[in-house]
Figure 1 (cartoon, chains in turn purple, red):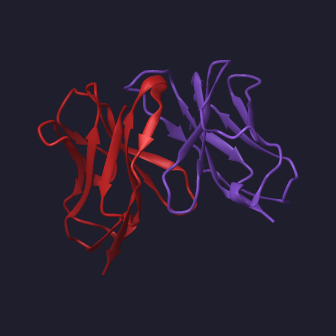
Figure 2 (figure 1 turned 60 degrees about the vertical axis):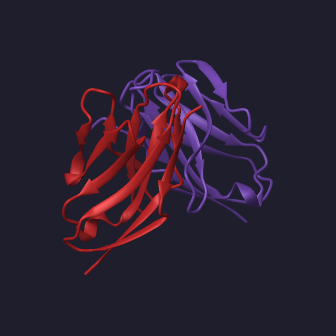
Figure 3 (figure 1 turned 180 degrees about the vertical axis):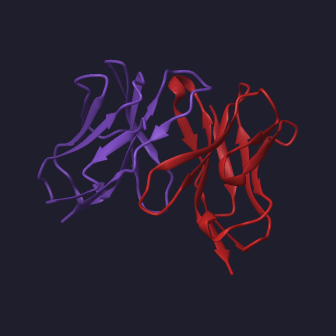
Length: 114
Length: 112
């Protein structure tokens, strides 16, 4: 089945130690998104890629970076994680940009910062 | 700018009872609206979407939603709740670049 895969499902990192979360997709979608979701809150968009074009949200901290080396893979890098960065990180894809295109979500990576 | 408001952060129903989760939207253009469900420690799964083709939209797992422009609403319903419906439900509106603006979510509890 075509899908969005996130690895690892659970990640523990130390305060200030860089961490990378991975997302891959077999849907061949053009758009990939990264969301941060804290407990009992709605997902918050961090950035998205339209093909190779990177689009950052205005309020995304500089501590968060992303790479998309090819269509299938996208990475979220947190350069110096703080305790406030503990959250579920969701990757999503969309076939294209446009109002009617739904997003397909991966299962998420739950990040713990110690 | 688009936004959605979900009334009721927690809803509790008995198994077999009607499920009604409320969503109101604000949009300067004809909206594209979505309902997603999230089970614990999982990603979001699309239940249904409204893209102006029909005002009554049927989705997966027996859910449906009706778009009412006059009320700016897109409420989610299911005639008979099942224990497996217990989850968090998010209403969302689509904006530029397919970016979704989510409501704050409604946690559905189903009791015996």
